[in-house]
Image (cartoon, rainbow, N blue to C red):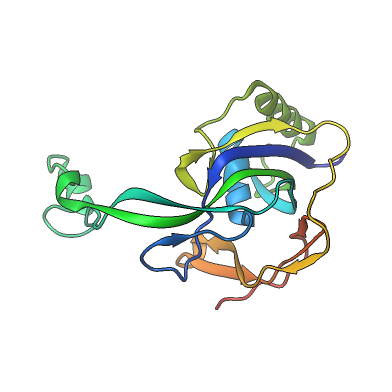
Length: 218
C-alpha cells in the first residue's frame, strides 16, 4: 500500500522567511519543505508517524508584494524573576508583554495569491500504531472535511492556508523551464539543538523534488 498523500493548499498571502534577513522579513520564492510539513501536521499529527515531503508543485506565478506589519521588538524572557522558568516553578508569577511599549512597524516582502500541491508520505517513528490504511484514511477524511488541529498557515500565522485533498491527476504548472532557487531552508533538527539544514533546490516546470536531496549545515 502506498503511504503517499496529495494536498492542495492556497491563500492570499504567504511569507516563508529567509533566515539571513535579520530585521525585516523577506520570503523565499516558494514554500519550504519544513513549511509544507507544518501544514500536514496541522491537519493530522501523531507521535508514531513523521511526514516527509516528496514534491512541491507551484501552481501560480511567483508574485511579491510589500506590506507593513505590526510586530514586537522583544519577547518574554526565559530566565530571571519575570521569566518563563520562574513562572513554571512557582506557579504564581505573571508573564507580561505590553504591546504598546514594544510595538514596531516593519516592512515585509511577501508572496501573494499562492497555490501549491504537496506530495508527501509518512514514516513510522516507532513500532507502535503501525497501520497504513488507518493513518491514510484519517488524513484524507480530515482534509476532505477541512478539519485540523490548528489552522494551517503559509509561513506566518496571520497568513491562513486553505486546503483540500487532490483526487486524480495533478494539474500542470504554468511555470516552465528550470530555475535555481539558491540555498533554502530544508528543515530544523530539534533533537540537535535546533540545527538548521539547508539544500539547493532546482524548480523544473514548477515542480521542486525534495527527495534524496543533499542537505548541509551552513
